[in-house]
Amino acid sequence: MSLANRFKSFGYAFKGLAVLFREEVHAQFHLFATFVVTFAGWYFQISKTEWCLVILTIALVIATEALNTAIENLTDLTSPEIHPLAGKAKDLAAAGVLIAAFGAAAVGSLIFLPKVIAHF
Image (cartoon, rainbow, N blue to C red):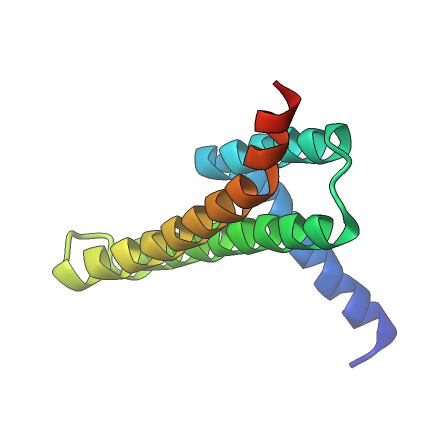
């Protein structure tokens, strides 16, 4: 693969990010939450280890949202009519995002709740 093709691959990925955040309401919510959590991390001066956990959970949630969106779009393309397996695929993909979001909420609670309680 040539260097030019490698750069094209990055272009496609960034195009996908733009589509994700422009068209998907849940991704926009996750992006908003990312800004809130980033501000909170700065405000409470969380440690490098805590930053690593926050960044990893943010990446996990946004990545699962992107995969969920891809699965939903592909399912709609291949099965435009209602089909139980199509619904099952979409539900399972959405469950992946939910699991990641619950994990992120748990990490966020463990990091920020003691700091918020101590602050007020």
